[in-house]
Amino acid sequence: MENELVALSNELVQAVEQAGRAVVAVNARPRFASSGVVWRPGIVVTAEHAIRRRDEIGITLPDGRTTSATLAGRDAGTDIAVLKLAENGTPPATFGSPETLKPGQVVLAIGRSPDSGVNATMGIMSAVGGPWRSWRGGQIDRYLRLDLTLYPASSGGAVVDTAGRVLGISTSALSRIAGLAVPASTVNRVLDELLRTGHVSRGYLGLGLHPVALPDGSTGMIVLSAEPDGPAARAGVLIGDILVALAGQPVHDTDDIQTALDGDSVGKPIAARVVRGGQVIEQDITIGERPRRED
Image (cartoon, rainbow, N blue to C red; front, side, top):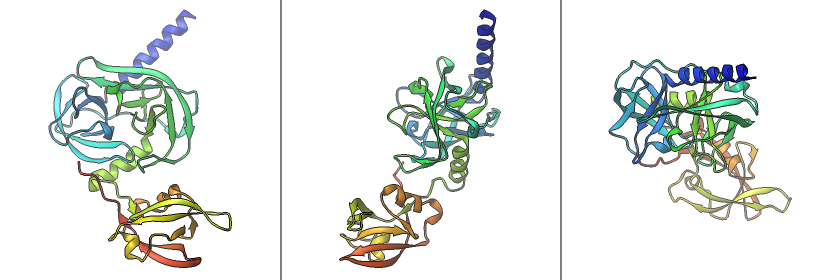
């Protein structure tokens, strides 16, 4: 038994050492740093919520040297920010397969502190689910809930398997009940768009909506407010209208609407069916781009 524990301990040490070679400390907020992963040569991925300034971002590299980075783009919806390193000498991470993850699988969260160096916590993947949308509106490819401790400096660090292969990045900002892993597939998709445009586009109707029961027992979304120059208002949607379908699909709640308003929909017309005064009306709405917050 003792030999088995020693072997397990040694394997975990090796996993942390391997993953730690691509994990950096990110100094972009007051009081304490966060962590990031060298995802591609010269590119660091970290947690968006830990980036509090655009300029003077300091990076502590795995070998202890410090350098600077510039913010290439950020997306609050998926809690992903992309930084470009001033120097390009740190090899990127080695990746595993989050698609094969199962509940109960042992995982590690790897971070880095400018003071204490690499740090690690161990736990399990407590829940694994399919695609979901965060409360911030971002589409995440898989729901990966962690049962381990995420210290403040760990956000944006690597979530790895017992071989030290990166499965995603850790975040404490997308759930109130536990830390989550943003899977590598989501990171890659968002990373590509942030490097290309600096932001992630999301569709926008300019409506304030609330679910309401209809006489036939189904549910629609009643328009409580409409931005005067918003996409829906320009198409003729009025306060009091009940939105019942978009692109031919029933609309019961905000998730149904967000599903229809992905980034590819911006600038394109979408067929909307509304009930007004008991009459069904078909309208085409040209989807706008959701306004972005100022960094």
